[in-house]
Length: 148
Image 1 (cartoon, one colour):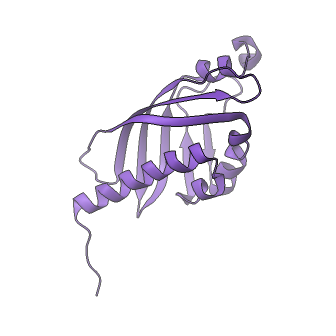
Image 2: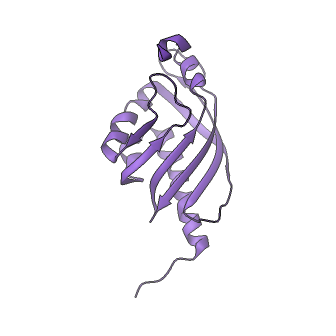
């Protein structure tokens, strides 16, 4: 016998997936983080500049893109707020991070707004609105090095 999930249960599952995304990313558990995505999941960066990719598609590409994140950044996420939508599988979240770039020791203080479409408990599309200048400054770079 199959039971239907209520809209609230679907919303809670989608928000739980998002919370796990933050948990696994801050813990450096990239393989587990990647498992939160559909096989053809997409990470979309609307404000990407220069050498930053605008889009990463597919689990293998997601893993390859993120595998070195814990070697370069130590972060903790906080102030998570969800904004409920009509679609219970659509998550809109606002949150912050605090941390540092491990090679430079520079701070990494970021504010995010994420729009995440889930399907059946997996991330289908993760649209990540963040300021790439914060990352550039944290790694000790200059904007010209990234847009040249």
